[in-house]
Length: 618
Image (tube, rainbow, N blue to C red; front, side, top):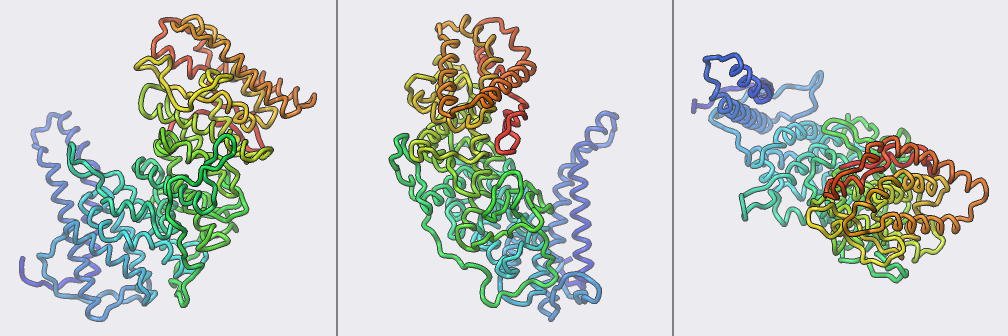
């Protein structure tokens, strides 16, 4: 069918949509069809079904290509696309070469051109129409490696500026539905691309080129890039190494801009660490003459004010976990908009940082890559353990995620243990640099979470000097990783984690619940380690913290009550541990390390916020 044919662009677009839906249904149900037919001993041959699914995909792409070409020809004839609705003229019939087919590179090029049209100054109605078309094209190809490679090779500069341009067109008000849809689709596309690899064996490498990754990780406009994470998918949809690199770059930039580099336990400054990107001058608000897109409803984007994670007063977005088509979480009616109170300045940078930290926390592995690095982990822990306004909620979640790996002999558990050591040192450094200063409640709650998950490790380090890091329990291959903490840093660490009487009582109660397990471990450990003595030394550190708090009679009573509640709750949930028998194997060691870790101790409350939702594996 090589001759030109007359077609209706609108009908062709509808046909392309139906073919896509047909292919999607066929791909979804083909495995079940084959399985059922085999179970029913059908004589029909369904071996060709996968090939038919691939052919249906090619047909759908070809029809998309024809529909796109038909609309381009209609535009050449003077028709202008506009949002569908009453009174909007349909595109005229055009003559089309039916042999036009759809290929990944061609489809990616069309979507790149569409993104450029949206960002270019011009007819607002035309821009809005292209805005509505973009998400469908992007989300259709989330699993298409060839498309993603072609798209991000060309679209990176446009995609990294998309949020800034869209905000400038619509003003500083929160994004409308159409603009948000584009950012969600771009975020999902980027997340999918970070997960993909090309080549095999020694030649295996990330799909995104080194230049593209560098442009994203160290952008000229961090806020605009941060919105791809804010509106993009949950952290588990991203590659953990990419998220870790992104978080490091954002934290480096924050340390450089604010002068909040890591400090030693004596308070001496170490500087901001590795140099981050220099502060970039960006437009503070809408561009002169920016034209709002007509018909774009100004619904609530990510906002802040009373959410469970972020603290006022800086208006920054709360990192959502929304998927394509859903609004980001954390929206609070009447809250501050995306730009915050200082568009283009510090609030924008903080918004970008929090968006990336939120996704890395959801991912879990990414947070552990950052804080669990043996060389640079301490630097980033020192940046996170602080009292910068507006950052404490995301920093606290990041700290929790960094120590929440399952105990064991693997690399993830090692990073988690190293993260504990880094956090303990960072807290001690904060206390030394800022005598008398108290960390925000959410940061302190995260520190309590660290202590509760790693009680045996803290006990082993109590009263003894040590080089912070991680080591296998007993130094034996195959045994779980443990955190090695410097005993000199523990009083300062627990001094922040146990600021309230209920915290000190809860920690003592958890130690009480572990007592039978500690006795058994002391008897069974072939190295003759005195685990009971270690717990006693940790109690002495808690004694020191309580004395520093200067508790009155009511405070001491609160400690005792919290101790009884925590001991009973932890023992009830860990009743299996009292049957601790058998050889001192890696499994036995793991049970010793995790025995009475708290699961739900909602009684522990600081500043009105529920504490200790329990050890979470991410």
